[in-house]
Image 1: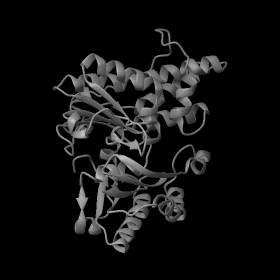
Image 2 (image 1 turned 45 degrees about the vertical axis):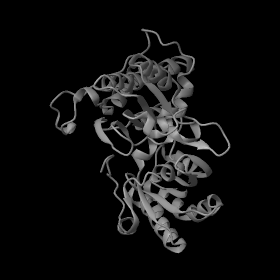
Image 3 (image 1 turned 180 degrees about the vertical axis):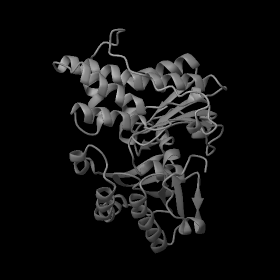
Image 4 (image 1 turned 60 degrees about the vertical axis):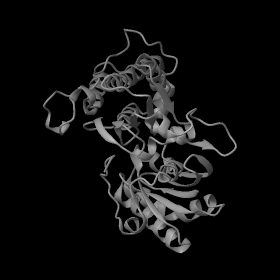
Length: 350
């Protein structure tokens, strides 16, 4: 079964065709990074306008084979961006006479380790996603940092999350403050690479929320993070002791990155200790971070579970993950999908 997926939740206009949920036949992504670099972050109006301009060409390029269904992200994300993809998908499904499937963006990130290119090696050794269940999912990106219990494939329950900034957002803010460029995650990863992880690195808070905080909304404080104070701590550090050269700046960045990565690793360790899991499934753009991959590998090995990471091309926002997860008919399908509206605050499991 070939499913065409469309993804426009933020600043990537993407379309892909995936066979039987895993084999990626085509994968086209138009990135808007150059459009948003002058602002140091995504500007919603700029993003939606670019989606409108590019969606037709991206779909045309990806659609090189007959498709049996159309899948689309309907949340979470920027409302104005989601609308472009959803309307395009509805029109395409109606014109082709095929079913429409609405997909949750965060859930789709957790499908990325199971994708592989047509004719290429499989990125995940498992024969099927079901064979890896139950699993702990970690969706970590510019907009989301969420720990998800996956008792079976297609079942999702949030057990921990950020209470404010996502990990990727924390990287972006730091890079902007230090004048390193945008997006912040990759540039900070490059600056920190090669800096020895020693006890004398600059120290930053790891964002542990207090139990009973209203923002927890019933979640366990031990499985949640708060990164909002991290940028403030960096700002005060730079004001008090401005880095004198690139070497000092690299050490500062490495210490900041270590605080974020350490917080993610700590919460993941605690989550893995709550119940028996077969795998740790990680998706999202921040999962490309080299230091995070090292720490999560250590965490998974200590817990005795498999670490499943996506190929680099599928870590960021893409449509292959949307088409792939849609094969399992998750979320909204058929007539209900044609009537669905965008849901900018959609949560995994909803």
